[in-house]
Image (cartoon, rainbow, N blue to C red; front, side, top):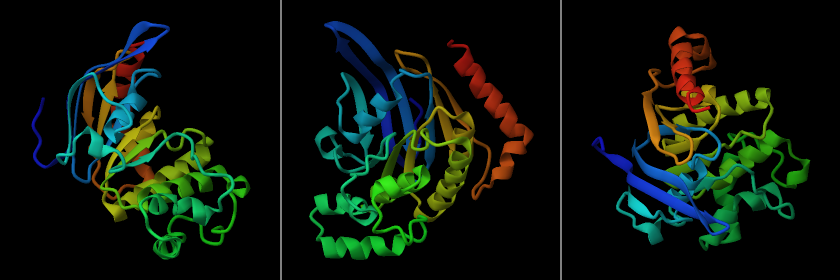
Length: 257
């Protein structure tokens, strides 16, 4: 596997098989992946290729059958709870207000409710939630739920953020708006991010590099560098190099149909 200086995540030869009705189903087959500190990396691939399984293994929720995972030297047991993991659904608790949902991770870590409130209060404005702190999830738009979920993920200040299709449930307009919101936010918090997405435009817009996976069993088919410096704006989608990179990535995905 390619050696990169100052890797934050280093994965080599990752394999995973599950069993359905007693029959083996190979999900991942020799995945190699590296992420440097403060990089934003996207993983694209067909449905069922093992993208979410990969995130679960990195997060410590699952264990590979074979392969090595190094996240700043943490072993499997100590990875659990050491990264921020935002899954596809917002997973907000309907009986808790926005503020009480956001502090959940802090409470689990033993921070008092009063101190947790003090820690999150300054962030509601930048996350577009000011004035909605006492609202319950059913009163929020889809975008606001996603922002609340994201604030809950980052407020514990993890060095690594795992994002599993965080905007997939949104309509095209809100998805585009939240992509730009996330792009601006990441400029300020400088986290290492691994983003799973089906949206090629989203991957190019947000990422420094893109890993394209094969269909199941998942392997890395291609690693594409994104040529745009940061900060970025929406205008890059009109750039000819954006269109060329998108076509190249789509060709890898279409060839698997």
